[in-house]
Amino acid sequence: MKHIIALLLILLSSSSKAQYWLPDSIEKLVQHNYYTISYNEEKEQANWVAYKLTKKMIQGSAVRKNNFREDPEIGTGSAKLVDYKGSGYDRGHLCPAAAMKINTKAMSESFYMSNMSPQVPAFNRGKWKSLEAKIRKLTVQNDSLYVVTGPIFQGCKGKIGPSKVTVPGYFFKVIYFPIQKKTLAYLMPNRKIEKNIDSFIVPLDSIERFSHIHFQNL
Image (cartoon, rainbow, N blue to C red; front, top):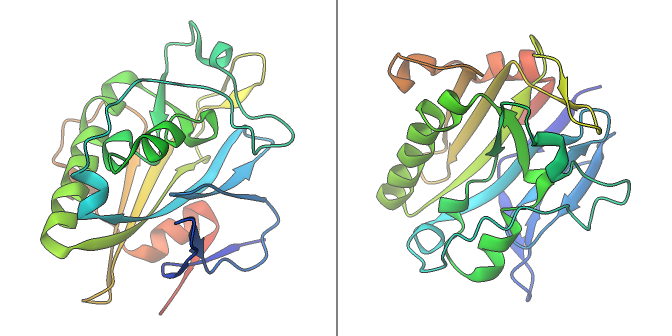
């Protein structure tokens, strides 16, 4: 079954908790204050993480503290620190810590293990990091963006840890520009990458085909 995600933030509650228009999904939806997750219990990580990114989000002063911990909102239990210990894989952020600098709450939430996915270190610290930086730059240029990030389990690299966390074969980012009403999509292999990140721009339907997620046209 396909999940349907509309790339539009339509409501902010008084507590500033992000409210995305997200129809019924077969996976568990978890809504934190600054991002929303569709959690995959079988894979022990998110199918996707969706959030609104603004200049205030990335120009804040909250300091990164690497407070990795289990997500209390995952009733069945999220992945744990021990799952990554000695695995050779990084705890790769889906919603980046550098995008959550608006306050200590946002920064802290970015370190929930439900927001992590196993990434090859050279990928996480290389071109994936470069893509995250590019999205922050685009946010400054456009005032705000909507981002959906997730793993692709096709071509997976096995499992790690006692929780058997699946190591994805690929990762995607879909960026929606609300003013221009256009979308930019990236699909990148979970390995060391030498090519320029823009060589991994793909049509949105490629992401849909590989991820089984449908991004509704707005």
